Length: 598
Image (tube, rainbow, N blue to C red):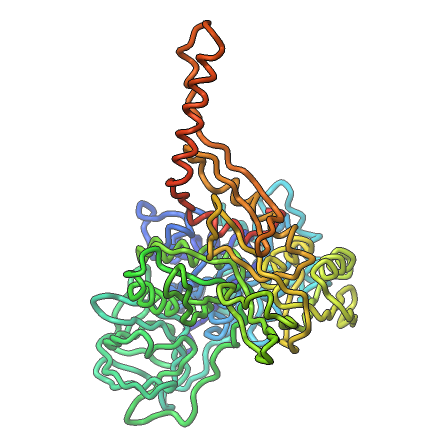
């Protein structure tokens, strides 16, 4: 027990977490140089293509210190992008300490601060590490000052290193061993292990990754999941090297995996506690904080026959990404699907890409919306959470939309642009408070429909990533709501319909039309992209057709010959337009969701 250390590496995006993890793995001798590759813990194609970490991975590193003692260092790698902050919270719940990585050229940034607060909430030992000291733009003295002032940590204890060149890695190892406390010795207590991740193996069922806090678990034991009392017999336990390594037992303080033939994916929930069936623990461990989705959209299979396959794919996907929330949804045009909640637009894109690549799903994604209320002339009040069910406008007396109380925490210097952004999104009743020097909290009452669209992305842009956002639902307030339809070649596209406030309908329609013009490929006939409220067209864009030069063969001669050919082509194009179908790529649906500034 005294020779185990559990730690994470936390930082702002692109401050060198994956590179430092690579060096630690190399120096611990886990992988030969000829088999080594960059981002060795990032095992998804998307992570390598984009150069970001999406999933936190665990690995046990052997290390021998200067006195000859051998240690097992359990590293749980974390992402840096704000959209994957839930992964970070799960990693922190399984650790006793963290390496807080800071770029020597960039200094303290938004997620550096947010991750530090998260680590302090878990009462973890924080070791500041200044990385990239080899860069020409590195300013170590300035970064030390920021560590003192912005983070409130002792800059004298900060370790200087260059993960790329391997400088200072030995000092990092020594700090992990001597400054991070060992886990508590609870081997003799009743088993309590916290599930922090899981993935589905078609041959062995659900494989859970867990941190054992108390007791021991061995192959042959019968375990119980405390969230639903499901019981399973343990087939194998082990630790994570670069591949899974089976062990005789997993005891308190260790991080590893348990295979117990869990066939039903729904039985396993990330944040659940595992205990022994014959000797259960009195109470489960505290799980992770609840996730609050910020962007919502519906997913539908391209072919309605694939609905069951999409349902299975989402169930297996949420095992690996607990931040995705979903529930059943339906559309008259698109059939059965799922309403999903995401942590941001990057999260939405990653979910879409992973469903297509890993689960081979062809999906259509709709524009986001919220639940509106309408008072009808008949006296009924109806709830509408899908634009398809928007009532007949002649029967509507009043429309009501949900309002939220938005709480935005940001550095004082960004107050002006954030105020402008909130006012533009129909925010009212602004209130201010100053929790610390240089930081301000702004509270606004805003329509939820204005927030879920692209507000969060715009806030991150105007505050350079420093703005944090939370909200509480208030009530429904009267509003002038209309249904905005998008027409392609005169045909309504259900997946792009939205319920919007009348004042913002034209600008929204123009932006969507222009986005679709860029995304939809040209056809052999002209395509009109229109935004409409009822029968009134309020915006239009035209996608030009491919056009063959039919007059190229006419060398001189009467002009009427050329006109005759052009008229003949025009008639053919008109006939084609009447029968031709417009194919809309998946990227067009995602493009509609994106911020105007991207």
